[in-house]
Length: 205
Length: 390
Picture 1 (cartoon, chains in turn red, orange):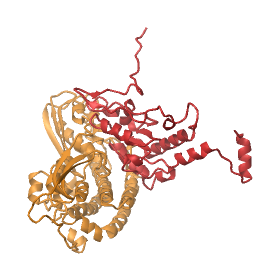
Picture 2 (cartoon, rainbow over the protein chains, first blue to last red):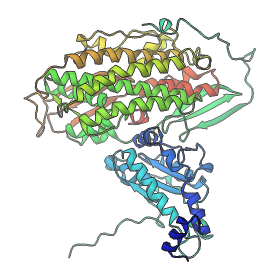
Picture 3 (cartoon, each protein chain N blue to C red):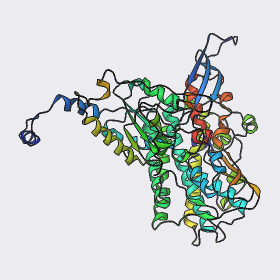
Picture 4 (tube, rainbow over the protein chains, first blue to last red):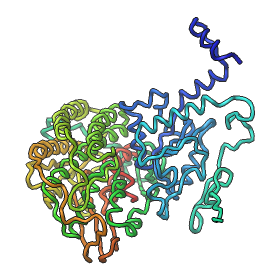
């Protein structure tokens, strides 16, 4: 591996050196296509972020695809109700690897202001592996841009080999997650135990 | 101004879509449209039965965004429900605030000071401007005008949201009105900024209209499509621009004269055909009328307090009774029905959402139409799922 100082010195001389891993990740991180999929209020801010003022196109992410087969990123923008949760997981399963999830807004993170209601899922991370959480109700478009940049950093830092390689390069890693069903009272199962478990409460001493 | 005058009376030559001569149906195809569909404006689903391209049956499926708004409100204090009303129709949080505040003020007998009434009218009409502009953008996007009209509409919307943000601290979820007035006074320079916006907005409308009103494709796609007869509209209690596009002169700003709307001189634009085109045009013309109200309200804005001195924030317990407050929200009649038992929570809290009730005649408008037109008929109803499912 070349030293950073030497490489930047060579770049000053007009010699561009890179690694295959960097080049590959550079391409991946600058063409993240989101799924055109809005659930509630946050979707309007997501649309606003893709319009002229904030211009999501600067990040290579303005191509909202209507089909999950063509999308790399799912922005869960809004309240996930118990009726909608199975469809969200199904859409995620239909996306091709590599795929990423941004949970946008208080509702997608935790149920938000509607958490006490009987029909709202208390966070989509109970069923899907979320890469970036954005707080806010709704988050401003700047916050969504920050989430995109965070996701880009995450993609750029993924090594292609070794134990920390991205999930889509690990043959045994799951690409699909079980779809919950509406049972007698609630979604069954209430969460995917492989990716989320209720926090344990230790009794006060 | 009537639609015919605004468009020089132009009408596209109507070519009725071919229909089977004997009314016989071919092989039927059942499809489910939604809840993830680029043009269902959220998470709405329609189960369609098609004969070729023609709709034979349409069954709407609701509830993908049911967030228990009414049930939560029954265990909340009256003021605690105010932020939740923002999230009903998330394009128009300020008009939602107003309708709820109006209902509670009726219940508790509060008087709104003059300045607060003016601020309410100004914010509500700004909300109407941005809602109708965005609706035009979304409707045209559904027709295949990818991006451009929506970009133009959102450019104007951002200017209005800047005003909201300066006034209330939030772009979308304003949570601004209080029982007996408004939460805070206008910041310095706000009125001038709003006046500048009102002066510049007609240029956007001129551009939008010049590009679209007499556009051959727009006329061909929308004229004679999704016709809603006035009798059906009245019987189904349709309200707002949907009703007026069918030619029924009913605007709650004129009928109830709530707030101080009797002081302003404005017309109610009416359609005559009740099709998608008239619904689009009624909204465009309504924006012009909103600008008239805004100009007058911003010029006359008096000084004074913005809260009723009798209003109490803490320990607010209205007398037992019931009240229904309604306003002309951008989408139609938005009403809140409250029953108080004298406690800190409402006993019953009911929202009369315009989007939901305007959606009930969707099948009547879509029967016999082509499946591609279902998308624009739905778009012209102007629904927001937060309000439909609550």
